[in-house]
Image 1 (cartoon, rainbow, N blue to C red):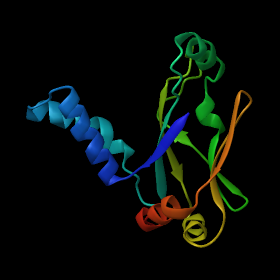
Image 2 (cartoon, helix red, strand yellow):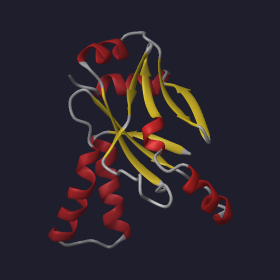
Image 3 (cartoon, one colour):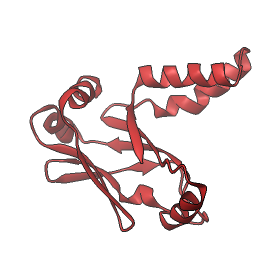
Length: 151
């Protein structure tokens, strides 16, 4: 699995890349891409993330994805001892398998934003029974997120 946090600039690059790859040159096509990707731009107090499940081997992927349906319910950003659960517009409870790409948002309270901007430890966590991950948010990534998150 891999993922990345989104902001206005990363979304702009994604729209440009999609227009280039799909050879979209008309206003209607560009508008559609903007409507598709603009929801990834975080609002006040939010962190926005794209999570990609990348398994090159088709057999392994076909075995793995059905087992992690609803993984979005198991993804958090921790700020100190508090966990902020991922929010997703896709609800896959009835899906036969999990999608390979998830667009997630984390709505932090004003107090959590201030803690995040301070020196309170923060991390991205996944606690799904079939996949666990705990990655600290530190260094340049943390600095960038702190500069971008607004209250």
